[in-house]
Image 1 (tube, rainbow, N blue to C red):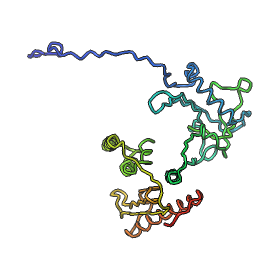
Image 2 (cartoon, helix red, strand yellow):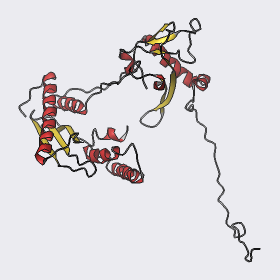
Image 3 (tube, rainbow, N blue to C red):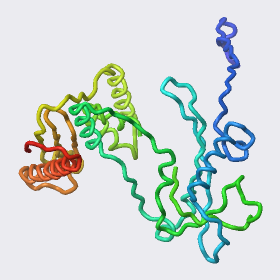
Image 4 (cartoon, one colour):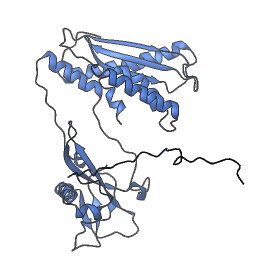
Length: 316
């Protein structure tokens, strides 16, 4: 039997604050979990129809009888809200993608390669546009992945909800490809963030609390330096200037060296990189030579780019 008097929170007059909740009414349709729910919502249904019509218009597949002894992959729908810069809803997006778990490596899938523009190319074009007082325009290619042809032979089940009633047993023989990071994007105009973000990316496969703390520190730094950026000026000369440096066995874990370089066109920074070398350097001079080789290759590439843009450069 207890010999002391138990004092509860209620007896002491301590009560949990009453939480009052309000109902929030929104006209935005929630993200759909499957095509079944999406077809019931007019907004998502319209987005699915738009995506399907684009696929049919671009002749993404051809309906054929199902071949014998072939792997037929499934498809799935991905739904996403696209917002404007002010946070308002722009449109509903629905993507039809192939379920890669059903594909077999070497048979109907292989290594993928996606052509993207180099940041150095964009900076070079912007520098020349400013110097020659040329107008700058921006465009976005809608459904860009549908413009590529497939070299692999891939068969896919007809999309759920869009099965041809006249050919329900047919499968799609794919003719074109279609497929479904944020801080790294900031480094395009914020070179001062490159090293810190690169260190965070090294631990993305197994992050821990110290890495999350470092990430929050980067975000606080970005919030306090919103007016920082990369400035491009009109060129007074087309002289290419390159700088490079490297350490020796600087990584305490792998003992690999790190080299970096930056290439300027007049006073405009066109390209910069700081990477850990793939091979081990037995001497500091060896690490320096590898760094020089990297910057020479980048400078030669920029020189060829200027030639293709019909720009005469005064020297390197």
